[in-house]
Image (tube, rainbow, N blue to C red):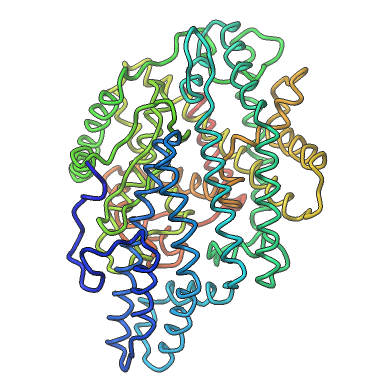
Length: 571
């Protein structure tokens, strides 16, 4: 379906039906109307807030559609140009007006109070946004956005001529599961050589982004970009020091388990040491799991999983399929990775990924579907800002769905292959907890050392990589390849400090997994209840609503990872 023709969730009451929301003057005019409107009661203030929410949702959807088109076709200059034109003109023009609207709201709120509990989260977020806004930063943030698009374009353009044909980087990943060690190594080296060919471009991109972000933080009178970004992300329930405790706990409790897993891998593969191309293959030399041939098969079989898990989830997934809200095929010119993007006015989710027929594709679709179910569960809230939860809980929705949906893998596999897939997933959970600590610790170091050189950055990366599990792999002769591994992590470039959420949420998802083992129906009901709140309550309350704890201390981590390790040993 043409996403611009997607039916609206409800009829507009403020934004004209024919408003061209990619036109900067049109958008500015609508926001100016809100700014000029007189408000003389709490009822009028709430009505004003809902009109603002309607406009925000419509505008966000216009931007989302342009972004989706750009990532689906990074090699189409006209599509890329439309997205560039939008982010270069519309957001910069309305950010100052939005700041005025925030001031207007907070000032009016004092005269005409709204329900304190209902608007608690909205009010504190708006207060922080007012605190951080500096008009001089608008142009700087636009430059960062354009550099992020450049990162997407660079990454999406990467292809490798291998096995007699040009292949995308996601498609090359399947060769790392080939039993033939020589072929795995050839594929790994071909991929890495291609990435290293652009290493200077990525380094230059990051240097530009880094400088701009430090300037943004300074303009906002923050001590450093770390402090700025934690405020900008509305992280009210934990601080950088808590992240560092997470790093310490992971190093103490999880890295040794990861080491044991890799030690067993080395023994089973009868190797003297593990090389980077030995980490994804089956240890007994079996052919890679082949869950499906085409993206349509992936959709059909995943549909059956959701039908079995929950009738409502099955119906929601079917609606996404029927509306054309799934773009899963791998093709040249498509950006790497996967994501779910909510079309805010239609209140429908869109899923993007690069499916190449490997086991990880199944987990990825389950993951992104969890995000989609979250968007649909919270769709009824009239405030667009409440239809999106903090990422620390959004990722619970997705990671828990990997585990809950993973109970029905018989749609894809025989019993032995189900066991094998689940074993690999458990290994992946241990690895991601370590990798999150690695990426997050590196980012903290980056912004704590504003004058670091590229050499120091390289040394810091190598140190953290070794600290959080890299020491178990032999990188002899591959020092340059190891030093630039972080270039693959788009979060460092596009959404700095957004990664710890995966570690926090994985712990929430594991709690949900253990609950489901005892009472599947109750666990799913709690899951749906937590999702239905969107972002309307503080983070700890969202966890509580789902029947789990918002906690990433040693006390919560140890029993969870111990159970994962026991389950892995039984598999």
